Length: 157
Figure 1 (tube, one colour):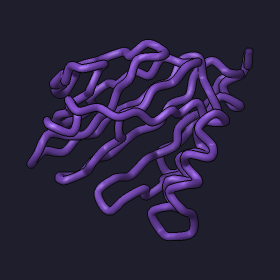
Figure 2 (cartoon, one colour):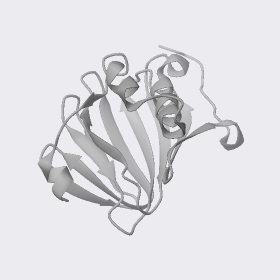
Figure 3 (cartoon, one colour):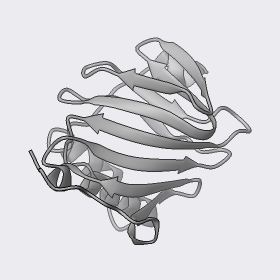
């Protein structure tokens, strides 16, 4: 475990545009935190599709809504979160997230224990710009512990 403090100044944080309505601000990844945590900020504008159904086998993913509203799929239930709400999704549980129709969300997303994710977010950015293909995401699912799933509940929301 890393015994040194990790400081990320707002003006030094890397941001990744992974879609026309989504910005991911990279705050701290597992290598910098000694594996303790991975943290990013997801800014989701009106109309953002958010993240599709997926699961992680090695880490819990938590959501703290800084502003706006967020819908989170947890197994077959959609949970509505508002500013100040917190939700932890355990490893192995299928989940997805996006702001409700007509809303936006600003969310602090945390993985515990930390897992190397920043290169995955950068890949999402390259898919958005056409520098990579969506099939590249499936090819790295084990490496980044991101396993896509299908959810009729999420599709019907």
